[in-house]
Each structure stands twice: as C-alpha cells, then as structure tokens.
Length: 480
Image 1 (cartoon, rainbow, N blue to C red):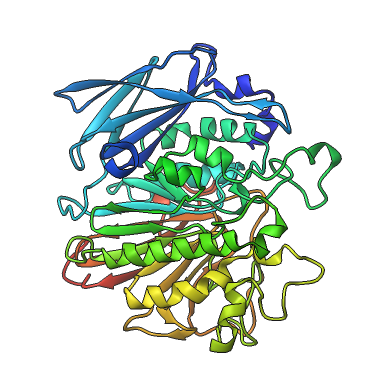
Image 2: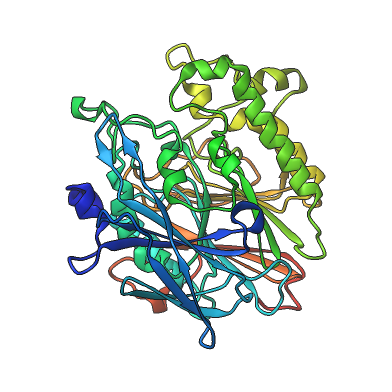
C-alpha cells in the first residue's frame, strides 16, 4: 500500500531524485470550461519555482508548445502545503489521433478522445469506483489497459472515492504518483464521492479515529478541485458544483454529485435552504442537459454517480417508504428533504447526509425514464452488481434503466455484503469476492458492458475473461 510511503509533501511530490515534477495525469476540457476543446495535463512540481513549465505535444507532424499555469493551497488544520499544481491545455486535437508530449524530461503519449458522434472507431471506456491505495487498487487500475488487448480504453471514468485521503492531503500526492503510469496516457473523468466531501479521519481511517487523526477534517471538495481537471467552469468550481456532462464518441456521459450542497460534515446544512436549492439546481441542470441530447449523434446516455439506489447489498441502504426501493407518492416530499422512512436515525443524525441518494432518487428516476437513460453507474458499495432495466422497482424492458454498481476498485475497507434477502428479481449479476473494473464498448447500434475481476498472481493477461457482460441495441449484426 502507498500508505506506508507517506513521509512528507516534498517526498510525495517527486517521482525521482532526478526530476522535480511528478503526478502526471490527463483530464478533459471544453470551450465552455477552459476556452478550448481538448485535454488537460496536470502535474506537480516540488522545486518551489515561481514560474510555469513549457509543455510540448506533437501528432508526429506538428509540434506545439504551451505554458502551464499553477496554484498551491494549504491546510491550516494540519499545516500541509501542497506542491505547485500545474495544468497545461492541449487544444484543438484531432479526434482519435495519437500524440506524444514532453515536460521537464518526462515523456508520454495519448490518443485524443473521440469527438461527439465519431464512428471512426468504437467508443471504449473503462469505469471503476472506490479505488483507494491498496495493492488491489493498483492491480485494478493497471489492469484497465489489458481488459481487451485490441481495444485499449480511451478514457477511465471514476465513480467517486478516488484516494480515501479523508483530509490527509498528502495521500493525494502519493496516489497520483502511484497511478501516474496509467493516468499519464489515459484521460480520466469522474465525479466526487463521500471521501472527497464529508469523510474525515485521514488516509485509511478506522472507525474509532485515533487522537492524532482528529486534525484530518473533511475535504469538502478542496483537494479534488485543486488536482482533478474536469470540464466545469470557474464559477462551478467556486460553487462546488462538480457535476457536468461530456461526449465521448457515441456516448453522452453525465456525471452527477450525490453530495451536492453539502458542507463537509456540517449537519446543520440538512435544514438549510441552500442544501435543497443546490440539489434542485443540479436536478434542473440534469433535465436541461438530457433534453439537449441529440440521439442521432450520441445514441447512448450513461450516468456516472457515486451512490447507487438499486443496490442489493446490505451496505449503504436507505429507503423512502415502507417497502424497500419503493417511493410512495405520500413520502416523496419527506424523502427529498432527507426525512427517510422512520425518520433520521436518532443515534446517527448524519445518516441522510451520508446517504443522500434516496432523496435524490425522488427526482432522478422520473428523468431517467422520461429521457431514456440507458445505464446508471454507481460506486460507494464495494462490490459489483448489474440489474435488469428498472423503473420504480419493477423490471421494464422497454424504457427502464440498467443500474450497475462498480465500487469494487480495491480500497482498504474491503468487500461489501451480504446480499439482502429476499433478492429482488431485477438483480441479475453480483460479486463481492473479487475486486475489478469494467469496460464499455459502443457503436451507434451496439452498447456492450463487461466487468472483469482483477488478475491475481496465479493468472496472466492471457487468462482474463469477463465475469459479467450484457448488450443493448442491435449487436447481432455488428461486432464491437
């Protein structure tokens, strides 16, 4: 685990004694968010320099250079001072083209993400949640490039709970160093989970927080927003609105924040108008975004969020009405306002804040149905599960949405479970024994999802096969 390597911010910020730069990772940007369509290269420098770095990138014919911008931040509760956190923009890339780049002696390569509607090749995206920093976490991330040897993932999507730093900022530095060889050539998009917002206690926290970890307070989005570049505007960053949408090839991805409106672990926010307003603002934005989708360009719509609602594991359960997974009309308003079935648990007043997805489902499910959202991916629960297409707790093969839990990224908290009994008829596949990640492969007519368990020391890449797979559309006549 990288936890044992945590020594100092300076030590974490350098990849080797020979270089002052490290933590290289790619993200995506748009004209609306950053002034250009393309990718963002993020990295850290520990040289205390007050100037930017020159970054060059080339398609093999034309070489361009760009200067990085950088910022830094401190955590008063711990005295942590971040390294310089740099961003360089690669603009106006050719859809699907291969590029190389260089900065401070570090070189890597990437493929530009497919532009919206591109059919020059299949859209191939890996998706995982709840990664953390164990040996299994490393295996999960480094295996992603080998899920299909002939179909490398064009991007990696993370459904929240990235590092499990929980306020111990240096864990982010260590984590991006550990993941650098994958993230430096595979653009990463994602969304926030509870460990980026309201969980405290430090990296690999324990239930009874030791006294020396009390200084590690909830991050309240700070580290995520400082280090992860996504296509959100400066105004959204200031408002801690981390939700957005992004097209990759033939798929329209929407990233929703279950913890929108929260303020760290501040319980008073539950009774604040600002909390409900922030959540309603996201719901309204979500509907406007779905309404604008051109299905002739991006025929598939997938939502990526942290908390799964249709979840058959015993973990992270909440409910609006007496029957699990049902939302009775009479209970909708209470549930939306965080008054779950039976009320907020008296022994745990933070329950509705920690498990906000039941309240959001009151508004989201009808939008999934109205706008024919194909799949919702969620993490949070440390297991794998795939459902049949569902609407209002019933299988609906015509307009229902498939829900997939992919929170088995490998984090130190271990596997979820056991399964609820009786098991709902819509639960089609589940696994809480192994960690792993999944891959989406889509053309305009065929959408295929496969989930792969991590390889262990007794198996090689030649042994890998999907634990679970399913398809939507007309796949019989078109192989992805």
